[in-house]
Length: 114
Length: 111
Image (cartoon, rainbow over all chains, first blue to last red; front, side):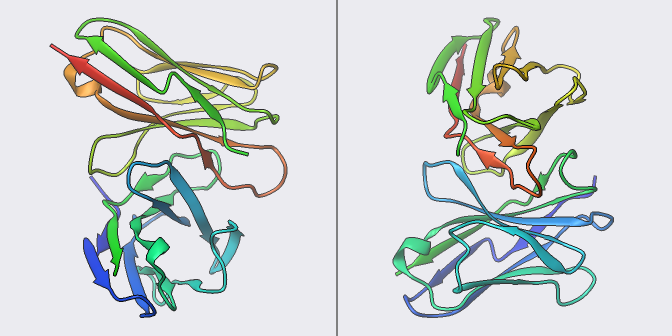
């Protein structure tokens, strides 16, 4: 069964450093998402991406964040200058046709900012 | 505006039933239900759309009351594998809005 994959599974970085989280969505999916989940809390939407551009972003997704689909398979989330409060689990998700279709989540990348 | 889920937590014995509720202060276009086990990614359970369409697993049932802006997830004859945190996510009809998740309901099924 096709699945969303994410790398790395755990990233430790120092405050102020840049990190890139990588995701490979399911191959025939067209809509891509990033969410984050601070330990023990709810899943929070960051950004959605369709047709090579951002379609929606939350207040959390400020200028420190960017997304890219550098090739036909990868979808990346970059945090330019990490802060302590960026420590969280970051989930990538993809869906076949957007709003009325289920989103398949990857296993997540645990980001720890020290 | 995030949806409100209730209860926050529930403990069941195997075979018992549970209902998890999700309500919104805004008109809804769709309600999405996911289950997350500890340390894992959320897994899709069901989507309920305005107008009555549903997509999801056969063994999961849910309702969507558009007028009341509420949805309920029904877990019957619970099994140990049902344990986890259940999140509802809601989308409003206005434009290209993201899925907003509630805080979750922690379900524990014990033998």
